[in-house]
Image (tube, rainbow, N blue to C red; front, side, top):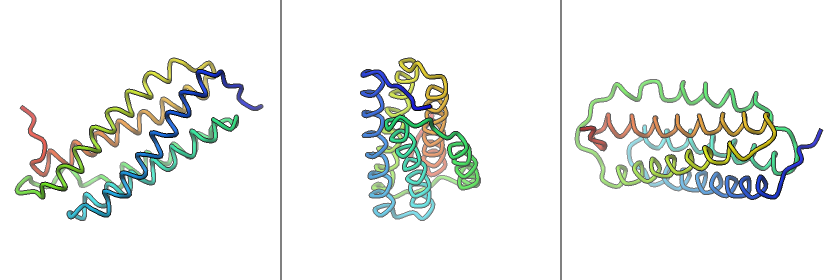
Length: 158
């Protein structure tokens, strides 16, 4: 059965679609600009997740029920790809890499908060669960970035 979206729900989804598209573009651009191979890989992995988010949001916008199986595999890929991230020692770092990582961390914080608001505006339980799942992944992206930055001396926790 097609999903019937209210005007408000459609507007939220259009905003989320735009945000996801921007994330894909930024992660792709930053993966080309980053110097450190681990950061490049992190950006590439997150870019593919953001593309899946973008596709899911556009699927909902078209009135189709979202598929949670696709989203569930994204989390396990992220966990596998980032498994060694916290073990590296901090030290001197490339300032440009630090700025790229910091910008993406700020972007992920913003995107996560946008999903938080949107989740409460949807009537369809399946859509709410899908948006909640995507928000969880956005938070995981932020955690990955934070852990990378902290382990490389780019983020000082006091």
